[in-house]
Image (cartoon, rainbow, N blue to C red; front, side, top):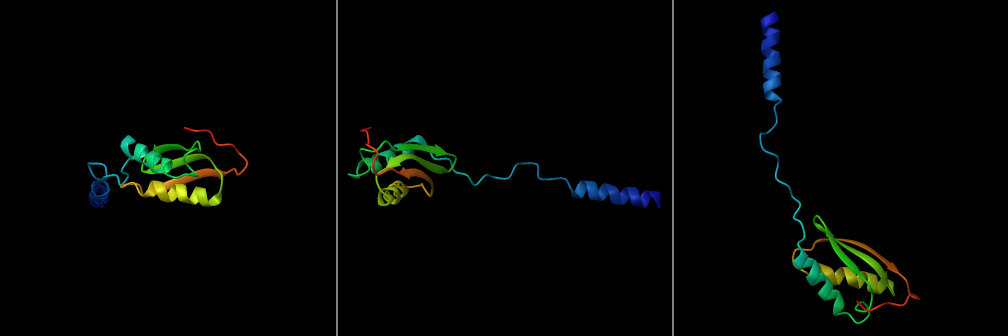
Length: 105
């Protein structure tokens, strides 16, 4: 009986061992060239070009921070940066500040 329990325990321990290699990651980091392309796209918009929009990448997400003069501008900024190939996720932290003076980049 004791040997049967030890045998079952050995099978359970061996069966519970995980894979020897870590699973592949699905996160595809955004490189600096894509960040620059996103900044260029924002610079083509007459309303957004003078705004101080900060663009950065965190893993597979592009992050927008700063102020814009309108809600439409906030939405357009996200649309413009998503035109860059490989940018699928955007964290749009832009704040609508209609009375804030924009400074040139």
